[in-house]
Amino acid sequence: MIKKIVTDRELLSQPCEPATAEDAALAQDLLDTLATDDEYACLAANQIGATKRVVVYRDAADRPHVMFNPQLKRGLRPSRVEETCLSLDEASKVTRFDQIMVTYDELVEDTLIPRRREFRGWTAQVVQHMIDHCNGKLV
Ligand SMILES: [Zn+2]
Image 1 (cartoon, rainbow, N blue to C red):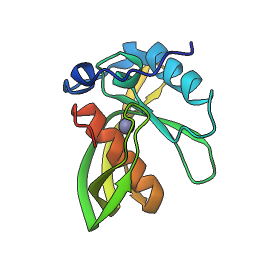
Image 2: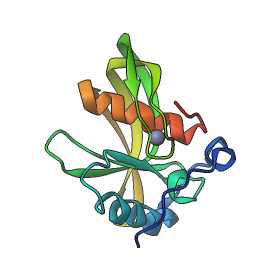
Image 3: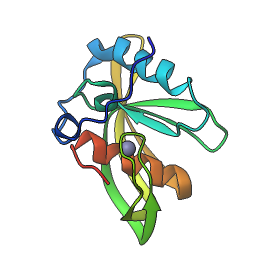
Image 4: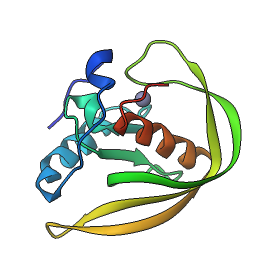
């Protein structure tokens, strides 16, 4: 189901709760909402009003992906970048790693399977932005 993007700072500032396999419908809502605009690179569940650790993002080939409970494990080559957010009006300067190692869960047939993945460049930046949202941190 397509949802409205939340801009309420108080809701967006709350750290999100761990997601479970029960949040499959929420993941689908995120994918549906992401698909409504080519400009959307990523969305966190709290941006559609659910304070759970579920995020979606598009990779460099424009394919959407879902991550449950993403966590940043390691980062290399930090730099200052300017970033925008769907939920905020103005761009901000933040420090992002160019290369990251992330753990997350993938929902496979009603079960969450732990995964680990490395991201670089633009996708790494997007994923760090999503992990910040899960932690209730705004750029
Ligand atoms: Zn954002």
